[in-house]
Image 1 (spheres, rainbow, N blue to C red):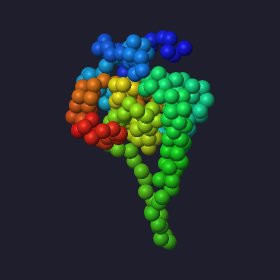
Image 2 (image 1 turned 90 degrees about the vertical axis):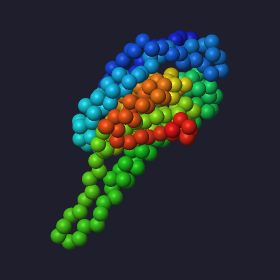
Image 3 (image 1 turned 180 degrees about the horizontal axis):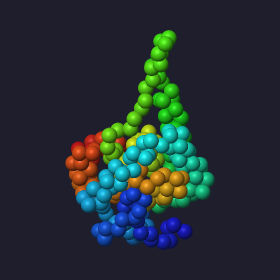
Image 4 (image 1 turned 45 degrees about the vertical axis):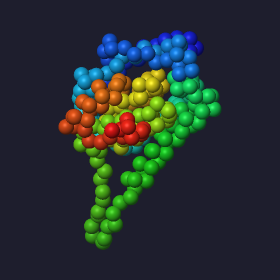
Length: 237
């Protein structure tokens, strides 16, 4: 069914679709004539809007109890193990030319593991506390970064595309996410999954587009607090 229709994809900023009119096509790598989606490219204006949305969401999200943040991503894992499994597998097969086996171990199994293991490791991280001597209580309180995290994800693994924006978000950060231009199709369904799991608007803002048009304004922002990146050295530079 997914291969038979062409969908429209737009940047997702503050929980809303933002149509720019600057269009690109997501095609099947194994059949370039088959257009899976027409997507709106983000530019400087959309990146600035995404940064503002991330900063607006930051206070409420960072103050949410960590158990509640974990619950959202554990719900995402359950949705991916259930009703979203075939949808995200199909998107990965069609948009990134993976076989059924490759898609299953990537888009389903590995990403489900990321969501569940990250929540477990967060509890391990928070459990590590300094020693307290008699008469005093020493404790360490983890806070998110001051600003937004810029997540830049590669085309070849849907699981990495899902992990890089969500792992800093789990720890209370808000994120501007630039997926690879050749993997916008599966990224669209990842955002759909996260929103259905209960992720509040503005916590993760998806801004697909060219590296320079998205990366330059993100890197120039005084609010940039961190970069989460997987890819080649050339792309990073």
